[in-house]
Length: 195
Ligand code: 5GP
Image (cartoon, rainbow, N blue to C red; front, top):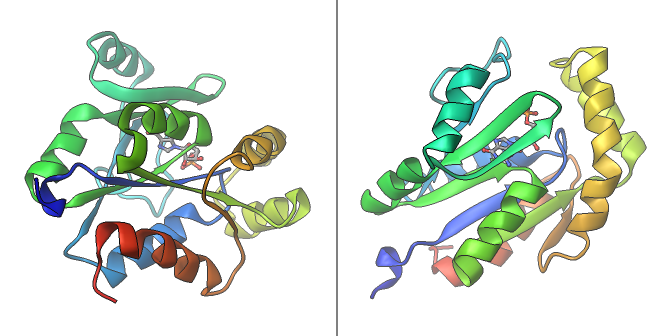
């Protein structure tokens, strides 16, 4: 089996606000012919700048639970109370069938499930903030969340950061080119990407 036929996936995981989607965008711009973003289903309303089908597919909780019951999700999590997120198996398969590598932006618990399923084919990178205070500052400056949603995200972060420390690849996020450089250093040799 050649490299392109192997079902690799790249996972950027870590607490909300840490910079996964920004760095994921940079990665896709750098290698537009290689990565396709894995669009998750979510039950949360989309943010004003988010595009249905590109950032997330927004569905009702009823539909989400029915999909989960049918086994459509390879992993799904109630990331915040009453708010579900899930990665659809058929979407990953479609990306592989297209000869591309899925790029996932998911939480650490969902990512751990995929690490268990895919083993070394899951190139999983944990992104953690320099501190909780910095994460809170970034979330506030993003101006996409209500105060309640910010508090929910910050409350979850310490346990996520502790879990991340056990991962083989951990990147301390910062607002510079360093995180994307580190991501490229991890994935380039495995996926044999052009420099
Ligand atoms: P947000 O609402 O800020 O977009 O996402 C909240 C958290 O859910 C983030 O950590 C994000 O990476 C994670 N997330 C997004 N999609 C999925 C998914 O399909 N599965 C899991 N487990 N987490 C997800």
